[in-house]
Image 1: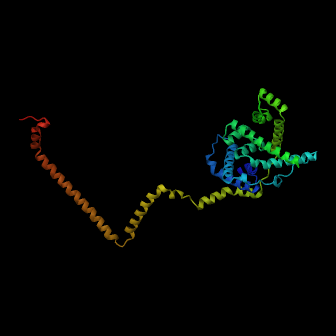
Image 2: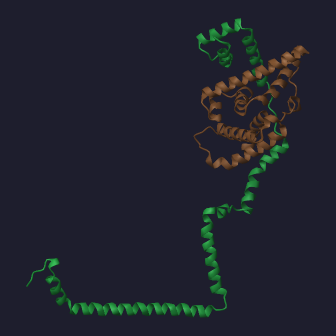
Image 3: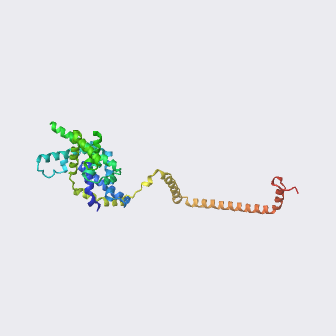
Length: 167
Length: 168
């Protein structure tokens, strides 16, 4: 059944994109409603998973443009993401958790299109070709957006580290 | 290569997608430029951190909401069929005419003078019929009189010069 197979993937995509657990639940419900309404338009030649993710991507970006989530804050990283397994070096573990928290908040600074491209590539670990199909963009554009997103996040991480060192 | 150009190549360098020439140029630049080298190591950390974000489980509450979507849709359809097309502006003249016709029909069927309306309609119809019959009779007598004077008319027409007739 569609819910069993795809709910986790869609919910995580919505949460990573929106940054709010409650918002992600509502968005997932809306995306499934949209999916049921669009099933009759599905072209059997297309990859179903990519088609569904395209619906999700379009809906998330439309909602983002309408509601401007970038002005809102994201949930704290540790509200729902539990700390990773213990590291041999506790200091290294603290730094890595701090990095994740900074990057999680930094995602809010990315534009909707760049944010979606980075989520699909670096969190969901999809192939560039699949991302290009989901986002209906040329491969080169997808690669350049992902590079820009990573650079922005790296610069945010740099600022955070510099501020930490000053303290 | 300039730092700006190197920044564009950092992702493909990180994912080992550059040709040997570009790869060498980026590696050489990173050895000498501290700023780009730091940016590259931060990009590596960023990528590593993003890949380490765990997948969340879907809550029971959300699953219940998702399972109830198809049945909700069905109920909605049964209760409220879609009559949106009736409020389209293009249908307004048609609906106005239909309303007028219905009002006239209801006057005819439910009004107190139904029998007198029936009588006047049948009288009008009979009058129409008798007019047509009179016209038909007139037409027949005109055809008959034309037949009687046919020869005279033909001779007269031949005598008109304009039509190419002779003088005899």
